[in-house]
Image (cartoon, rainbow, N blue to C red; front, side):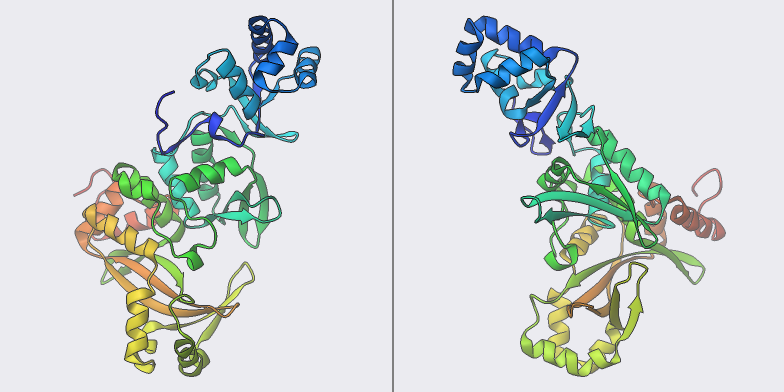
Length: 383
């Protein structure tokens, strides 16, 4: 067997009870070939340590579904390379529904579309643990922009095949739910954050950091989801904001100080999803809180994800600064920081436009408009 690359997921790595539908009559042909090699069906099932009725049923009913466990045993007995089945599996099933049609085994996340998906799940999407179903990893993505939804689905199908997606609405957002744990497991394997991103405070997916040649697509996705364009002194700037829970770094003394000095001055904001958050400018926190607490938040309270993204942008030649803008308080009583990457140097803004850009056309068009207005680009060429 060839060495398995760490960014790939092969069919034989899936859970043993996962079911496959094979092309045409391939499963029946394999069972017959294995039966003839063993001598008869009874000898075959003993050799494979499987049940006689299951194979007899398969032959009589001409079944097309086989589990990962049984297919591996058949392949081993017939001395077939596992890769032989890569293009012969036409469905991955769970119950009656095909979770993936025409799966593209092995699933390869070291590609432009894979990096884009990772950008989506660390921004407007996520991977969560379904405690009601054996703690499997589910994947979700939310957006009010149809273009973002289409981009996510396109990249998902490019990497995995035709994935079964459940569409619903949540406020003004379209919600995409992917029940197949195969997707969540594959994304987590290359470093996607699992669980609450703000609370867990984890780093950038390792594959994006280790292989910067695919990072442009990651940044294209995250700036499309979380980034914005503004202008100052008639020149555009670009921002990206991340949030981080402070629960793990605040002592009870710290929390008491914030509750007493800062909380009463916070203003409440209600989101379209229904949840509420209170916040205050961090410049005001600097004025009112103790220097020791301010320094602690500045040193330990910034999102690790944002710090990694900032470092990688710097390596790509984009100059920027990090701005700790606000202190927030969630509805559940958790203090959070809002920290932004701020790109405003002229050459860096132009470099971003040319090499990364926003996945959303309306944001990219806005940036283009401002750059054209100041004469840095024209309709036909970049100056």
